Each structure stands twice: as C-alpha cells, then as structure tokens.
Image (cartoon, rainbow, N blue to C red; front, top):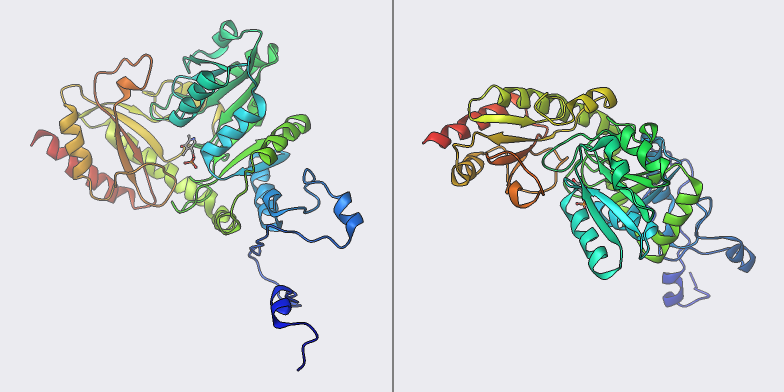
Amino acid sequence: MTHSKSLQTLLSHSNYIAPEGFAAFPVPIHHASTVVFKDVAAMRSRSWQHKNAYTYGLHGTPTSFTLEARLAEIEDAHQCLLAPSGLAAIALVNLGLLKSGDDVLLPDNVYGPNREMAQWLAQDYGISVRLYDPMIGAGIAELIEPHTRLLWTEAPGSITMEVPDIPALCAAAHARGVLVAIDNTWSAGLAFRAFDHGVDIIMQALTKYQSGGADVLMGAVLTRDDALAQQLGRAHMRLGMGVGMDDVYMVLRSLPSMPLRFHAHDMAARQIAGWLKSRPEITTVLHPALEDCPGHAHWKRDFTGAGGLFSVIFDARFTEAQTDRFVNALQLFRIGFSWGGSNSLCVPYRIGSMRDSWQHAGQLVRFNIGLENPLDLIADIERALATLSA
Ligand SMILES: *Cc1c(COP(=O)(O)O)cnc(C)c1O
C-alpha cells in the first residue's frame, strides 16, 4: 500500500468512523479540545452559547451535554452547567451574579468553603457579605438591603443540619428582587424539589451522590430562567470551567443507581440515627427526620426523603479527648471528608469555633452512612462507645 501522504500526516488525520450497527447503552466518552467545522460558514454560524451545536471542547462534547441533560431532568431544570468541583460551582454562582457594591447573605451554617469564598469576595472584591441565622425564615426580610443581590441557602446546613424554611426565605427575597441560590447537595435533587419551593439557582456537588464512588470531583449549577442561565453561562465560559470527559462518564455511569443508593443511605441513616437517639452517651441527634433537629417541621413539610449524612452531640460530660478516642476506635467508619460514597465516614468538628452562636456544650461528631449493612455499623458504633468510659 502506497501512501499519498507521509506517515506523519496520516497519523494526525485519523479516518475513524464509529462502527455501523454498534448499539450499546453507555454514552460514548467524547474527548475534544478542538471541534472541527465543515467549512468557514459552519464555523461562523455556531456560538459556544448554544447547546445545539459544538464549538470547542471546553464548552462541551456529546458526553457532557448528555450529563447536563440528565441532571436537568433530575432537578426539573431547564439549563445545567458543569463545573470541576462543587466548590467551583459555588464560585460560578458568586462570580456570575455578584459585582462590587453588591451584598450577599449566607446562612451561618453554610458549607465552610462557601463562607471562606464570601469572606474573600468581601475583603478583595468590594462585595458585602452578611451571615444570617438559618432558622430566620420570613425574618430575612429585615436583613435585605437595597444592594442585596443574592441569598444563599443550604438545606439542611452543613454539619449542624438545621433545615431552613425555604419557601419563606424565597418569598421574602423575591418580594425585594433578590435571587435565591441553594446548595442542594444533601438531597441530591431527589428528596427536595428546590425549584418547586421557589429557589432560582440550584448548586450540586456531584462529588457526592451523583458520583457515588468517592472518586470524582464535579459540580453543577442549574436554572429554569433563560436570562439567568445566559448570565451564568457567560461566567462559565469566561472562567474556563471545563470538566474532564472521563469524569463525566463516571458520573453518567453512576446516575441510574443513584435513587436506589440514595434510598439505601436514607434508610440506614435513619435506622442508625434512631439507635443513637436511644443511647445515654448522646444528648441530641441532628438528623432532619428526627425531632431533635432544628427545622424538622420544614423537612417534614417539604422533603420526601433524607440523605445519609447527620450529626450527633455527645453528653457534655465527655471531653474532646474522649470523643476523639471514640472516633479513632471505629473500624467500619473511616475518618475523612466528603460523603455520598459506599464507605461510612465519621468526623468530629469543633463547632464552637465555626458558628456565631452555638448553644450545645457537648462534642459534635458527624456521620456519613455508607452502603454497609446498618447492623454492622451499629455494632461498630456500640463497640467504640464502650471506649468512652474506659
Ligand atoms: C462537598 C460539598 C461541596 C463541595 O463539593 P466539592 O466537589 O468537594 O468541591 C459543597 N457543598 C456541600 C454541602 C458539600 O457537602
């Protein structure tokens, strides 16, 4: 066979065509930076803003477009943007919507790095940031200033698990033209229909339940409003928030099992939280489905399920050294951040130094319930509790 072109040229011009008749369920992993156009007119007619055509890998390939569409279906959104992590998705919301002179309100129990980012925006970018009591509900109206642009919510809040009154917060914010964003990671979009309760922007850390494998970092921002989607889409492009298609594929692969996994996390977490409630070492179980949890009534009214993440407060007679010993003594529960994977995790938090007002004297420990048999997890906790008095 004689080549009309040099090997060097042929190696760069693959004539690969997907095999005819190769029908299978998985979405192919389409990698690309460059997307080629048939001619100059085709190039000029396409815009990166339009999801009906491809322009450049950074703005999506068929693989990422498919994930965006699936996530939009879950949350009943109209548009979805993918970000390289949950925190990057938070940054996308903040940088896409806020400018210097604007004011943003954050719940006191907001995901820590979101608070950290807000403090940075306040310090270096001329954006004012104020924290509010997550249980404030309609009272948020009194905190809204003429320059307030964005109200962040999280349901439930990180670590201390208060469930806010989202419809009341949204009604007060909308009456004054303020946008409401929610970190909806805990419910995975399955147990809480955030748009139906009035929220304008949903942020998800896909790192958690959507990935399900503790092996991917990714985030998403979802909207129903075209103008908002365009504004966020411009920020997404300007910030260069691309995601790797292998990671996108991993999330796509996990999505069909997400409702089943979520249900299993939910059932096991409620069983274990209920058992912990009966233990004399524990004074308070901060699980939204239990009455101990501030905002339990909101959870009951607005949610259709619960995630696998909750916290407990130990009796104040136990010192930090003792509860640290408890955490170290656990064998099935490993010590580590993040959640939503199949392995159970446990983290003690020094909550007094993290919250503006915190009433409890006892130590707080957060549990992420994985997919192990809950009876084995209870046995693990029971054995570790015995070390408290040792
Ligand atoms: C994990 C998490 C995030 C951030 O996600 P990353 O992908 O780890 O950056 C944001 N919000 C909540 C509530 C989370 O638990």
